[in-house]
Length: 70
Ligand SMILES: [Zn+2]
Image (cartoon, rainbow, N blue to C red; front, side, top):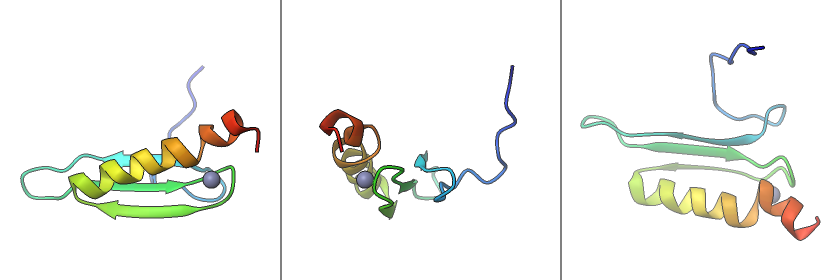
């Protein structure tokens, strides 16, 4: 069973989550998240900012809401 992946992988309120796109020589890496737990969203560009965004999401949002019981 394979579900068709959406063409646009940017997370939305309807399909929350974390998306990271690696940068190339010509583009900066990009990250976006929409939290399914609290509805927060954030966007980042550049390796350092994207890393911080991923840390923020995994520490404070997404699965972290289930861990903390909220
Ligand atoms: Zn959240």
